[in-house]
Length: 185
Image 1 (tube, rainbow, N blue to C red):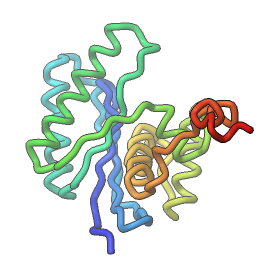
Image 2 (image 1 turned 180 degrees about the vertical axis):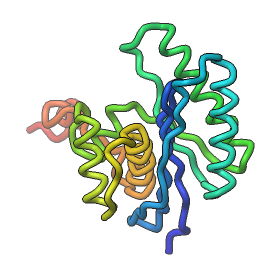
Image 3 (image 1 turned 180 degrees about the horizontal axis):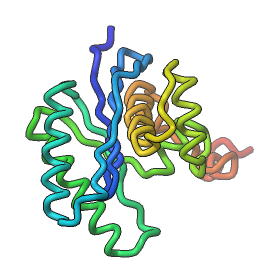
């Protein structure tokens, strides 16, 4: 029997930070909680980082997650945005590690959307709809950053509970024949 795990997913941001918590038991995942930290009224960048650290610390104290799945900053944005997201991500990771989280895994935004919807370019609304169907819950529409975080947590559940999740094809028959010339007659 697989040991139950609690997974904390985080969609880092310096304006809105989302978090989602799922309980993973074998191949089944259950919704626990989700929420957002609204930082839009705070102007001081360092006070925002302190708020992220404090909030994630409190979430960890409430739910005792075993693992953290966090969205990685994506490179299509300008350098200043990536730097700010990296700082937010760092504050969240340190808070989680200091509160007993055993492992941290980063996921690209497209990877989480692909895991939940089957399409890496899915909208936030599509992700929310699939999460509702998959987890059997109704999620508030105003919490799209939280549903993104929940998607990251569920993506991590899928990646770690399915032994074939990371197996990729190697290019079809042509590649197979190149790799196994003895099979050609």
